[in-house]
Image (cartoon, rainbow, N blue to C red; front, side, top):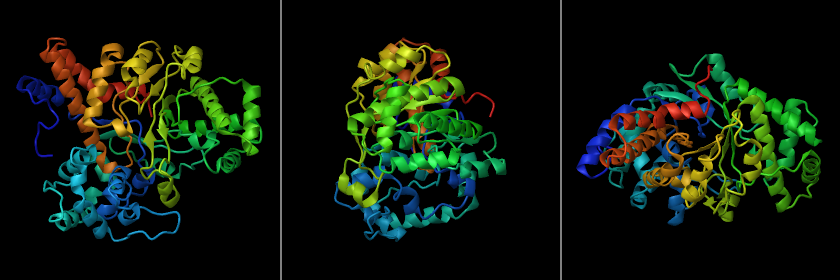
Length: 473
């Protein structure tokens, strides 16, 4: 983006204040405590693939939009699992994106992409059919240079912490390689996050097989419920040793439940035997959130809860291409009663931290802000997925600040697989916060010096503290 004031308020007084506030946050290191970058990218430090495989093929925001307009993901190079033919020519994929670039007008995808073009690759020409090949060639030339390898960009992006996300049965080989290399970038580090969804969701195909793999990996008898818990605790220890400071839980709902050990064991055996139904699966997931909270009391992992996505809603897309290709839909989510069992048990325990996200922004004012303002263990996570847009970020600040304040929120998370977009996403969040704080200053509601301190906290100090990243590596 070539306009230095983009995303700032249009009104002159507020715009000038926003400029001044943004300057306090602009150059702060990036804290990325939740995301989905493949750690092998940095461990191997190989050049990125062609521009299409960097910007199009893995980006479900892009492929989803094009699919909605009749462009099959296979034509965009998205791998298939049903054997259907997939486009492999990167230039052809790129031309297809350029032909349909008008579809992204006003979307965060266009904003992030154009910021990456300009800020990372120095390309300010507008993408379109007439510029597609020229931009493709320029990007390809840059990607071949050593300065555009992943580790070099990590340093250039000023990333202090990058958290990736792995299953408990992941061998963490990429993290081990980074540790063996002694590499985290100058002043930076790459850490893992414990994401056990595939081991607690009985409705996820292959659940029993993954449980068996957990037993083999840990040497625990996962045929019993106590053995299953012991195996999960063992893997958490390994993740903590690899640098993890948080766990992540992407359940369909925010339900929590304390079944007791005996009833949980009955459900567990039922699941292993293939006899669990949908209600059993929901009860087991809800109970496991209590179990993970208890584990967090012991090992200190910050719990992140990401509920409210109906996964793989587009069944044809899922059958053809598998998970995580844009077939997910947000759903209405209830938090007040759903979280009560967990909060009753541990909501004010100083050992526990829970960062709570939503895809249902109707709950910002009604449920989430009052909950975060009522329990010391609870923090509000940044707008996520369908809401991490300039408008979504603004609405978040406008609706939660009056009840929860700034300091019951946990700072920005980029939640991305697209490594090159990380600085763009953080910059958008910092600009939106500058604009929101500028309004408070202009209206006489907050002194300028306190607004300057607040924007630095939101951008850097809060996520570092809330996610316990201020502890020695």
